[in-house]
Amino acid sequence: MGQFFAVSTMAINDIVANIVAAVTDETDAVSDLSDIVQAFNQSGQAPPVYPNVASAALGAINASAEYAVYIFTQKYGTILGHSLPYDCGVVLNYAADGNPAPLVLQLAFDLTEWGLDSGWASSIAETIQPQVASSAGIPLTTYGQVPVAGGNLCWVASYGIFTTSQQPGVQNQQGVIWAFCAANR
Image 1 (cartoon, rainbow, N blue to C red):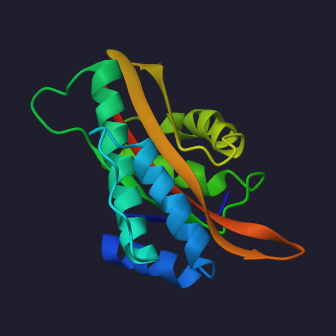
Image 2 (spheres, rainbow, N blue to C red):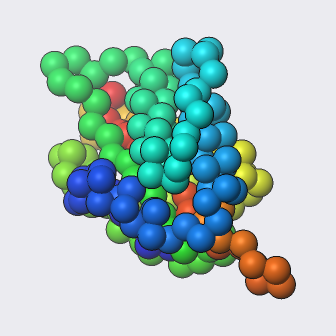
């Protein structure tokens, strides 16, 4: 699927720096990242105009995370007693038909960190990966639930694909801005 960078294991400024380093087509990257921000915008107001990849990437990561948490609370309600755990970041060198193992590892890591059943990571990845691959560059959110002892493991993932480089005669290189949250209900 690609190389994951997550706020659970890396500072967000370092994630943004990796995005900036990967981008060779700044115009398309800023445009695509701005589209992600707009798609996940809950305020109804126009998003800011981003002057560069760094600011657009930070805006897209934050918007994706906020939207995943928003959809979770709309779909499953609030989590009493603590805030909803979430993770977010980017997948660089994204390949739609790539190996799902990095996604499974990231989901398993997050679920384990949050004290949830990581045995469902492969099943969740089997839902998320084909949806990202078929999204046609449209930022989307998906969600689901699986049975666990005492209830359900509920989850939400938001994602948007953006261009990192374009060269004539070569397949475009892409990244995926993503966010994931989960809790037992």
